[in-house]
Image (cartoon, rainbow, N blue to C red; front, side, top):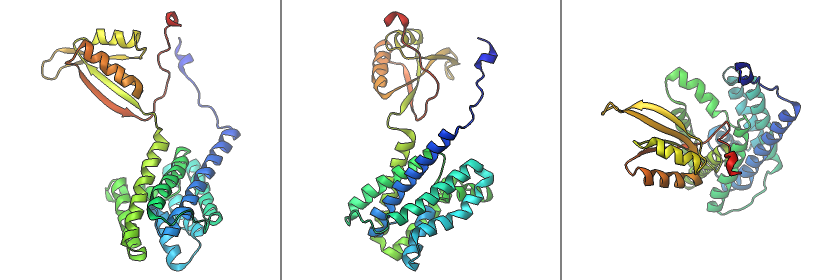
Length: 293
């Protein structure tokens, strides 16, 4: 195959793709808005970041929550223009505007007064909404954008700045709503972020496996022919022994993982395995052998 055949030019964005992305951005924003107004606001709990600041100010000064969310996020969205690009800024502003509209639509739509239920289900719905927005290249909060700029200015990591910002916000919520509500808010935050990870990474995470063994050829043959797992041989040298080694590299599903371990233990019980979670895999896997179809 020639080099020219390996080159695939990027496909231009179609109107259909843009519409689809905007629909998902709006859907995620509306789910997040329902979580805020249906679970958190009635139970005096807050989210982190700029949304959390908006919720505190809305409670203290009786301002419209949706309007505050949009206004307070504008400086951070503008800040992101040079860092993230035009498309991200437009999609983020659209998602934030949809969140502001959603909070007004679902205003006073109280689902439950039970704090534990509000923490769990409010956090799950909030994480689902935010995760959908992030997966479609948007954002509902300007905290991370601000952190990207400040991290370069002060030499701190993005995570450290976000953590410091949220400590301040939850401390303020403790003074306004009470410390018990602040603790429920922190629990909601952690539930939401676990769901965000699940939405973005998916439930079926793959495993990246490296196998170092003196029986690499035998193990590789069984993996390819019996389990139909695509593998790659990597060549290295033992740091202590100085002996050349053949390393097997492959990416498998969780279901294939147990079969792989069984094969390795049966052929070489002393083999070394390194297993790492893989959240995204691109490209095609080895096709089934023609003679087995």
